[in-house]
Image 1 (cartoon, rainbow, N blue to C red):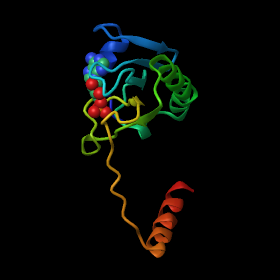
Image 2 (image 1 turned 30 degrees about the vertical axis):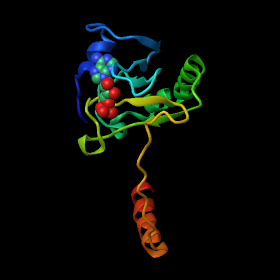
Image 3 (image 1 turned 180 degrees about the vertical axis):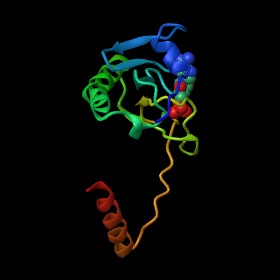
Length: 139
Ligand code: AMP
């Protein structure tokens, strides 16, 4: 398990300023300093781990319990038409800060943010074989 003492741990400890919007025993949420849109919020566990799967299940569940509530508050506060929840794991996936974080990104029609979803069809046999391997790992 990583022990990522990043800028986000310093924010949780109050060593550097942030605009806090929510806090409980396991969870901290604050406004992104470089927002993609008004209301862009980061929801993070207090435990300093880099990757989602390194988070103990009860602490991941603690985020799950409040993520929708925080998103709803953000959407209502800024009058967004929708939102993306984005959670990057690893540099190759776009993660810059090595402390688990969920982005809540309010969206508006024609906001210019866009997204890429370069999907490719795959043969059913290949999907079936992959699902077998995954079930074996998860059983
Ligand atoms: P990611 O690329 O998924 O690792 O996202 C990291 C996010 O953290 C970016 O959106 C940054 O703008 C944000 N960020 C970095 N430093 C701070 C900070 N001191 N306060 C608030 N947000 C920050």
